[in-house]
Length: 359
Image (cartoon, rainbow, N blue to C red; front, side):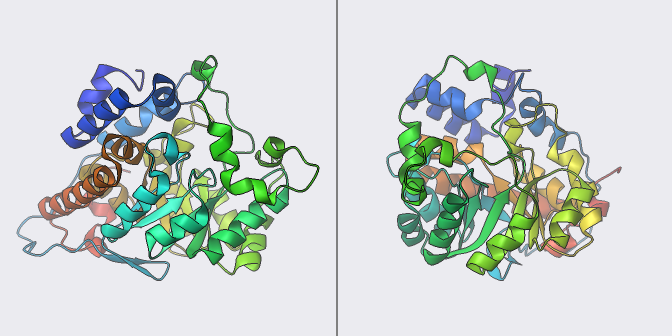
């Protein structure tokens, strides 16, 4: 099933469906295609949402849920809920206020934003807009001076952690976008990176992903910035252990929203193995297809400590700027609270594996 099919749109909760529909109405068609596309035939992209739907709950009864608390501490940061804005590129294509609107919305909701290397807004302006904790996503670039310079700038601008994307040695082919060209992406891409490109080096080549990155980069980034480094893109337990042994402070289970290796397993299926392998050594986060409080409750019960939201934030931003993202995050957090109430889990500590049936 295509990710753009009417059935997929109708399966979304009403708020997300409305925001997506409005986003599709106000954005140029090529931007809509860029945001919603997966790689190759889009198999992983299409499966990401339905994988959460396949799980079934075992709710507790006669449990006092008169007060339900979604708050948590994540890498020393107090948050109102286990929801983070995930790193997505080029918010400036969605709305003139770009990442500044998304960062302000996350802060207003007491949550946290992860800012992409491909941010349309300057890292310094994002830091000011966030007014509190935020994370920065890092790619290993062909010219190390680029990712090193960006990481140092993010730390100086107030980022409290780095998220190293590990599943992108190269950018995957997206045949459905072959004839589509989104205007101004190079300008957005180089807005933060151009000052770090070594003299005499081609600017666009310098910022491309490096296929030679290894877990050693985790320690390099920690030593360079003093910030904890989480690794994003992990779908295997043994890879999670390799990253932790190399100094990672957390693991993000992700298949890049179905935009890298197509037919990669869904994050809903990968999560239990990774959680078991990590064994409580560090936080485990997950993204991919989380569209409701029920999806969030499922992920938490399968062992995730927190969740990252990607495409829905872009739809909300395009639909109504900061107000749209605030509405989305507020609703997701309330929907999770409602699901926890019905499941008999008044705190996140009580969202345990036994709430979900099967393996």
